[in-house]
Image 1 (spheres, rainbow, N blue to C red):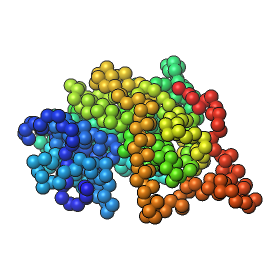
Image 2: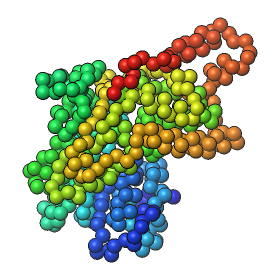
Image 3: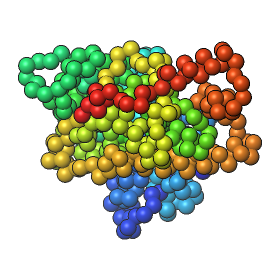
Image 4: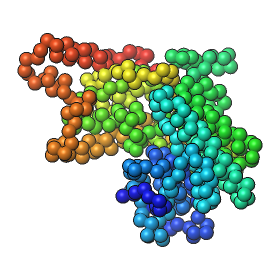
Length: 431
């Protein structure tokens, strides 16, 4: 298992069809955020391309390298190890410059930040530091390295977000779109659609985007912005909506949970597979000129659609298990996203390979297996889930057959009334 210490760590990808090129011909990539969902898929992809991969990780007493453990190779096997991890902090410009001078990368991928929109309302200052200012620090480290060494061939990719678009008033120039809760949303969203962010996270992402454009235009750096719409996978964090759903499906199927608490299911998003999206980022850096690209599937599906596919795949009805909880509503949410990736298709030759239903089923399959392993620990008494608020306490009582107090019956009634209706409103199927 990969561990964090002061010594650089190493690893290598699997399923490499051809022997790696000679050391002096091998490209070197630096990934900020390598232990995240996107970073782990990108590391695998680049290793299979024959790259030497370096990743920056945040120092922590609790190692978080599980997404790259499967490609870890002990650094003592130097002839095999082509992935190295380095302790760094994106808010520390001096450490970033030191590692760039040491590694001398050919490509730099800026993927690390604070990803949660809801958390950004509670921690706006921290979000600005690790999303916007950190991107500026990394760009400046690359610029100063290029200025000092003359290595002007370095290429840089800044990962953006569809949250930057937000919602805007409906100008006459937009022929299509929809009214969101906080304004007009032109659909589909492309590279020419103006930004109108609605959360501290989105504002910070816009700042990182414009910093990248500034360094490209002011200093002539090869810098690309990838505006990535929702991209999911079995490696998605469990605090994200998609993974929260599939994780609950697995646990409900295995009898470890009965209820899933969610926000409104009518939100409509453009969902794709993270493994496809990292390929798009790599393709951006292989072009002759730097540019900005929307990366999306071009299809929009509601949260209700996601629930139907996920629960239906294992033979369950989602309305028997989903409860709407107002605590998950943000102050200014954007409820509709649909991207236009025709530029990426035309210039990069990129298309998503995993469709919506296959993506959901892929995630459910993984979480079913995870729930099976979890159940072994529960049955053996090594794990207690009875204190979990989503555990089936109320449902067990309701089906136990024993007499319930009047107070308890009212509680059960309130719980059932908050669940999804069996016949969803037509608006939930917005395209």
